[in-house]
Length: 225
Image (tube, rainbow, N blue to C red; front, side):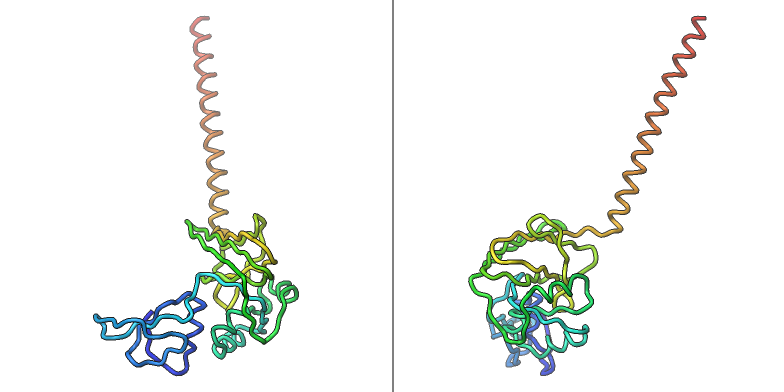
């Protein structure tokens, strides 16, 4: 990602999106990123995220903002460790009220330890395996978008909008398998319509075939008569 170094940008928040490298002018202060190598084609420097970021992370706490504006303000003023340890939700989003009541909340940052996460991407699906002692809010560094569904251990659960733009799921302690699947309602509707049309077509062909056999049989009997 290429940026112009500015003092009013919280670059650490970019780690939430899985941004591992930033291209900027040499000598720029990119908080949360350190110079990695010189990029000769542009004459700029590649800055690497420290610590390294992953495609998904687990937060022990949640912060329920009253609006997108409040959530963005918290994101803008928080460092990476605080953001990762405390997932940010927006009140009023589907499933948010239950998640805010069931997940421990607070403003103090707390790192999630002894957690192992693996991510496998497929066609219109993302599978995440999580092993954790405490559970919490799992955030996938992918854009929240209508049509995505979440399945926890084979059962569909509310898909939450975390950090105003990412996808999240509340999980308990232990081992869990989470599958994010893209299946928009429009596609489902078109699929049902196409199946119905196919069924009508098959019935029409079958009816026509039966009528043809009956007509040929009737013609044969008339000739014999």
